[in-house]
Image 1 (cartoon, helix red, strand yellow):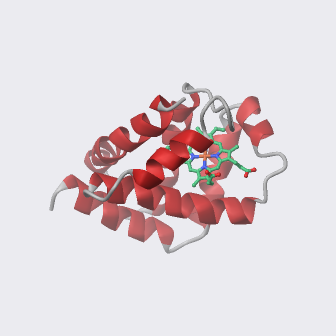
Image 2 (cartoon, helix red, strand yellow):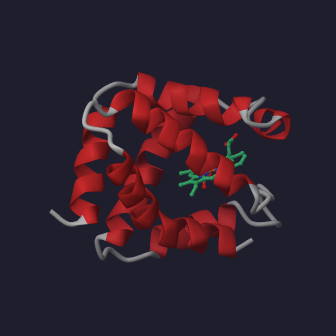
Length: 130
Ligand code: HEM
């Protein structure tokens, strides 16, 4: 299987348990006080649901789908809207990989490499819109 297929399947195994997203946000918010503040007034149950779709968009775009939805995320996260510091995306990816390690029983360092490879272009697109 190619990397996008492996990551798609890995994500499917992670998504079986809502705790995956709860853990992700715990890890992400624990990585910086400034990030925690950004979600102080957020409905986290709704946010977990939105992120579930957002990660799916990253994977589907890598599989050849239109990047229209990622460009919209680039705009909502840019300096004129949520004003998300480009440096924070590395923390985002680190928290996500930690959650994958916890939740995918088939996790391996090689699979983590594939996750990085598959998500990188989509993350660069969102971050690059800053
Ligand atoms: C909202 C995805 C990175 C902070 C959202 C939404 C999605 C999303 C789907 C809801 C739709 C929208 O409002 O446009 C992603 C993806 C990311 C990413 C896929 C990585 C590639 C980040 C980072 C931060 C962040 C690094 C840093 C703190 C926020 C905030 C909201 C949001 C504050 C709004 C929360 C609210 O409504 O109160 N994100 N995000 N995101 N994201 Fe991100």
